Amino acid sequence: MRKAPENTAFAPVGGTGASEAIVRRVGELIGSGELRPGDRLPPEVELADSFQVAPMTVRTALQVLRENHLIETRRGRGGGTFVRTGAVDAPYFRDAELPSVEEFEDFTVWRMAVSGEACARLAERFATGEIADADRQRLLDLTDASHRSDVSVETFRLADADLHRFMAQLSGSARLLEAERSIQAYLTRTLRHLAKPVDTASLSGQAHSALVAAIVAGHAAAAREELKTHVRSTLDLMVGVGYLGSHREPE
Image (cartoon, rainbow, N blue to C red; front, side, top):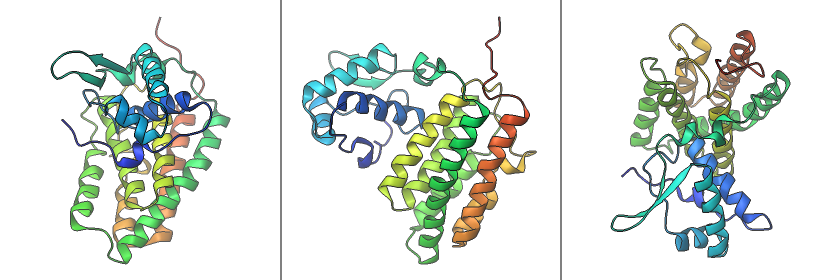
């Protein structure tokens, strides 16, 4: 079984609408790739304690997630609640309309602010020697994985999400990490109908090499600008191929 998500994944939701907040949180964890098919969720009592809600609130949220084919509960020995195989292809992700150009432009502005700050903070932490060698190596490995094009769209999308989420995690800010999860889940929903992975070899703006190089070198301003270039290139690509708000399923 894979390593469990970071503790912040199941941080308290509180307030009214807690069940809906849990549905969104778990949905984003699946959409961002932090929870993968076959991953086992903590027991209801533990989730209730982590989210700081009543067990019935968790039970209600899990039922909604089951009905939307994101999770399944298995009985008997080795049972529990697991992320379903093919969860990212569930209607929860596939049925929403694609954003318009204007909506994606607004999302891009938000992404630049959140992800740009995460990358800059991470570069600062590299500059001050706060990042362990193991984390540096994992960052480089995730970068390599995100540049593969000989994989399925789902594998490519999750590799890209893994990298951006890890950079936010290493920034040291729990709030930036939470926002990055939301960003990556949104991208999973938006890019769900791509015919094939993006060719990072020919589309340099989609590669992460310059961004990660700036981060590892400890150049915060350069890291922020490279992130902006990367994010802006995604918008340009989506607009250029007429993808946004215009997709239609084959007859």
